[in-house]
Length: 286
Image (cartoon, rainbow, N blue to C red; front, side, top):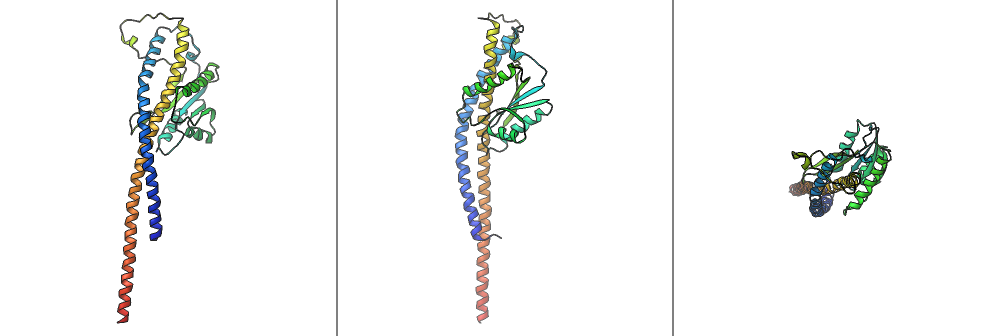
């Protein structure tokens, strides 16, 4: 059995760790609420933008656009979004595992890594990393999503790649973050739209031209998809971290209780031994 000094040192160390996990839980809870608000507030715009693209694409099928060109997927890019840090349970590993499982049937895969965790994972395994975006911080803006979108649009437009898939973790609720994959390029306009639900076909008048309208909407749709993925990942990260820190705090409390019990048993055994020695010494003197 460990000495009383060692047990007390362990209790003190665990109590210090428990204070840290409590603080991290409180910080994550505050950041989670803010990130959740941003993520949920952005969803209606993403849904409306997808609907507009679907309706416009349904009446401009004759328009040819580089981002709509379908090619044989010989070179595929996976854009994987994870967090920069850990201490969030299996949040990052679940997203990476989901991405890897969907790469198995792809011929030639390259990576665009967003987040230090995905960058480190795929770099250690010698994946071909075309670009990496790390250290984006908490204040994620549309400018960062636009930069990432422009990179993959340029790669696709120059026929360097044949398909691009976005993988991120969708925020469902505090306890559930669901890995999701979305095909970004070639752009596939959503099929569900108000125009398709109507019995008549809407006739649009395009100004200045259908090509110019599609040239504006398609990059915006891709940028917004990436931006939504960044927001969802951020909200999911803080939810997972809050849950992980809560579990760590509870586990620390259980360990402290167990060690305190061991300390009490050790003290009781020491006292019993001392009493026995005193009684034995007194009996020897008689």
